[in-house]
Length: 189
Image 1 (cartoon, one colour):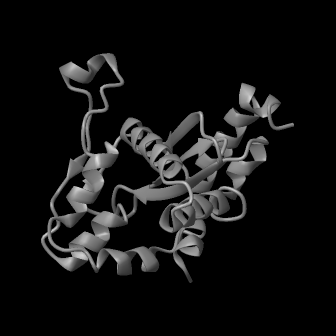
Image 2 (cartoon, one colour; image 1 turned 45 degrees about the horizontal axis):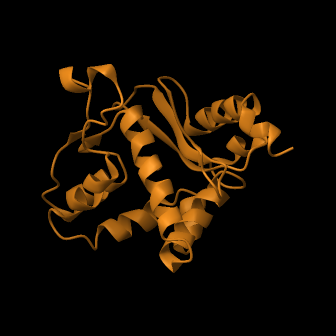
């Protein structure tokens, strides 16, 4: 499986292997520019305590893998996730034609059309994004999320859907419902 396929099909073992190549402290430096670990400044509460990520610096290779996968040592808010996807969309546009950017762009498009987030494409607007499913702990229900941008090739909207009870595929369906009712759909019929 290559990186594009790993993105499309949410291959945790692929990304755990990538995380295993990171040096101590490198994960934080990779995440920081995305806005994922800081206040976004997008709420009225920004100066009065906007909720922000919880990030525990990994001390071992295994902790780095779990943090990179979002399993342990990191918790982010939906607003931070939306901000990070905005940053990603801008980076992909700024580096159009770059081989690595193209792999990421195509992997996210594949994910939201035929991959794990495929339900997001049912909204009738080309979208790029990923799903996720997480649990608070053993025996608890799952949280589902979808994050992405649309239209996929020339983004003007970022979506971050969080479902306190559900799976990532459920959140992708919610994204499709929102897109189906959005003005973006008129431009893609």
